[in-house]
Length: 277
Image (tube, rainbow, N blue to C red; front, side, top):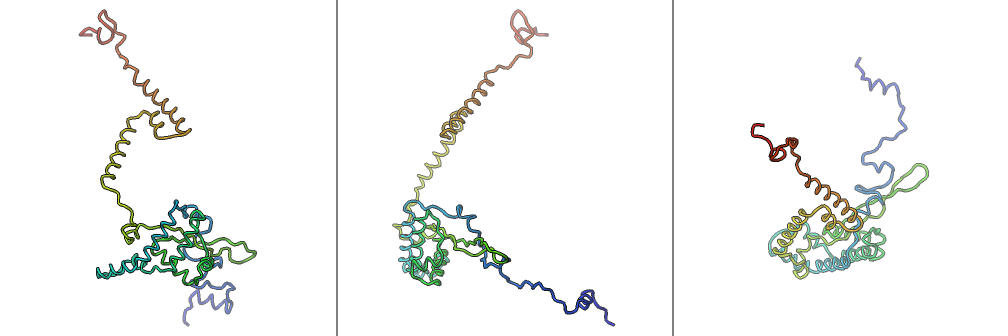
């Protein structure tokens, strides 16, 4: 008779009984049952650090750069062909710019200007404001992200439900608009920032070194007065003055003579001692 394993004996004993719990299939949905996408972060937990308030005129400057870059695609393509090379990743993204992408970017920059940098439109909102299809909106956002004009972060939020069911659901993405430094080289020369002269950088370094050396010579009170302002600066001045007085008093104390008790007619201490004392 062939020997049976413990597992086979157990299966034979329980017969046709089947577990009521269904096995979890490979690639199952989120454990809550909600369709939460990968790399999503909960809404309201990161936005203050993610969003950035644009400076005055920054959104207009960024939009102008995007439009100019889109208009100069032919020149960029000609340069690549003349150099007989394949375009880089950033060049492929720039060559993919078109009117629909610029239109989407313009709507997002308007939100950044009006909402102090807090940009989180839904696809439906962008479709309504531009008249473009969902696929076109998705493709435009991908191109903007590839160029570096936007940074995107997926989000999910909690859902209050009764009983068993999903507790989370996907919500709109968060976006940060920007003008990346890597695209500046592809803009016309008149739009590029003027490089800082070397002598100016050297002057700045020398000035910083002189300031550091000057601060090192100040007393505690003067250092606090120069580097800190307001009520905190006044308080630190008082502490610094106290430290300065303590240091000054310790330096004015003379070194006591250990043999000052030896008196003689010619002096006190070591001065009045005999040669063979």
